[in-house]
Amino acid sequence: MPHDEAAGTGPSAGRGTPPLPPTSASVGRDGGLKDTPANRALHPKFTTQEVFTSHGLLRHAYYADEKSIVMQGDVKHCLQRLIDARIEVDCIVTSPPYYGQRDYGIDGQLGLEDHPQHFIDHLIEVFTLCGALLRETGSLWINIGDTYWSGKGAHKSGEVKQEARRFGLRPQDRTGDGRWTRPKQLLLIPHRLAIALQEQGWLVRNDVVWIKPHPVPDQVRDRCSISHEYMFHFTKSRWYYYDRLAVGRRLPSGRVLPPLDTWQVPPATGNGNHRASFSADLIRIPVLATTPAHGIVLDPFNGSGTSMIFARKHGFRAIGIDLNRQYCEDTAAALQELGAAEALAGEAPTRGH
Image 1 (tube, one colour):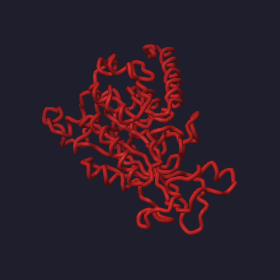
Image 2 (cartoon, one colour):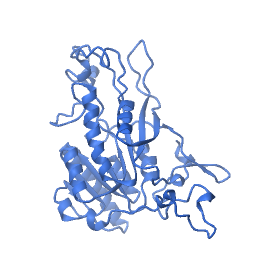
Image 3 (cartoon, rainbow, N blue to C red):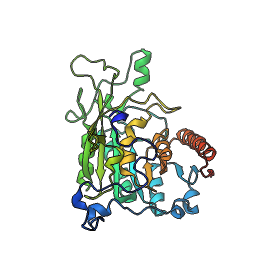
Image 4 (cartoon, rainbow, N blue to C red):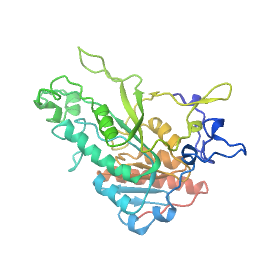
């Protein structure tokens, strides 16, 4: 959605007060909000700063300041540490490694499992822990792309571009099982993951289509070229925090409509050492719509730290987890730079750990 169509796009949009109720039916005769589950969800509790900066938690952090925590290590171990520290987050927005698309050269990485079902099973384990961290009024947003099964074996061409894209023997280059994993099969990993999470008890609120303008064309001759991915919105409860005024489409009459479920956003061109970084425009609606004042944004596959930086710039606290030490270092450097800018603007200075 173009930025000029949004009802709230600035750093403080919708952050000063809780969002307005969707209709006048939510307002009582005295002018106050009726005591309903939907209205209570607009006023969620939040993790105290004492818990957020507790020594027991920060001693495990790669980097920390008053508003940020970067953790380096196995994602499930780090999530359990956050759970043990009694952290509750309000918005989880992330893009896990895509199946068979990247080899980050790190032991314990996800995305190179022999079979896509094993990959999905591992993601379910991660998001089950995320569910334990997420406040009852919170939201989980997952961006994930799909993969075609090839079955052609290891790449043998000497073409430089192909060599960069196809690293040795990828999982999808193997023979496969002849049913789900067979040559030319689109694996439908995004929706298989969404259905698996739905069966675990998550509510699927949207399967947003991310349209990529001017995509790099697929070198194929018998199907359409892929130009989209998905961003799924999940919640734990029927009643959850959502500020449509911060992200909605404002009409000339002043009425605000919810954002559309198709987002045209250019892909990120890369961020530092990360080859598949998040686009800040892609996470604008998730963060601004579903993070209340004093809330915490979590990215369990933090990568270059786009989610954390965006959350911090809009006044929220943020936590990021990544297995790759260099990515954690890059995120810490970006947060320190942001902290220095905030200090010059009169904000509280940061402190490293």
